[in-house]
Length: 320
Ligand SMILES: [Zn+2]
Image 1 (cartoon, protein in one colour):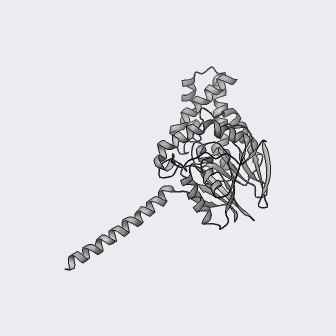
Image 2: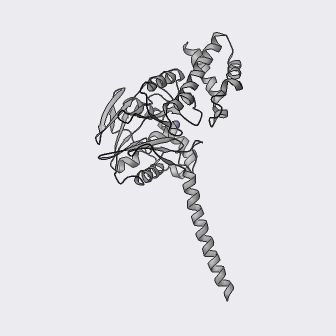
Image 3: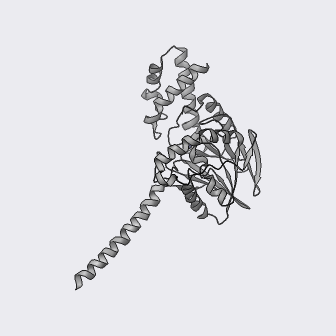
């Protein structure tokens, strides 16, 4: 009766193999990379593509800072399940608890994981301006996540800041480390802010900066104040920029992929309107190969560039 034994062994091996493949697939699918910037400052870099069921809506970049007395998390992910994944990434680096969460923006993956960290005892910090926009769009964000995350969106409960700061520039010391939360102007969404570590010269920009992938001008974005905000942020002269989407780079990359692109949109459309070009002609002109050469390598370029010109044209037309 050798055959049945072999068969059993073979089946057992198959089960083990498929189980380990599944684990591998799960962890690859999530693809939330931990990027060490210094011994105490880390970025968590999500996928560059869209939100998916597999990535738990974590297609953005977040980060954390280990202080002398607990961890400060910058942005909390899109859901409690995503937050638990973030928590695991932090626990892989330090045994300290996450004591504070700062939200840089109002988009789902900046703050809808807050409830998880609150339940684990963290204080949630955000500028009042940011919270105002969170409240305004919360239903839309949750509806969108339900479509993508299905049952994984079930536990989402909006948890607003427990420490809401009614200022445009907050200075805090958390666990002995200095943090500044600064609103330079409305960007991707109204109320978007950045977190600045003055001693380390590292800035977490939230959705003000997109690297490796094309930024998106949304109906709620203000391209003019976004451009101005970026140039104010530049004055901090950061050594490292942790963007809202994409990998961590020096300031020069942020200037090349976000700052120059915002200048390209605003200045290009302004010139076209001064020349009395219609919308379609402006979109075609500013999509010419030689003009877009500095940006065409960015992921999602084809799906966003023409829309971005379009929305810039309409904004400038209405205000200038
Ligand atoms: Zn985003």
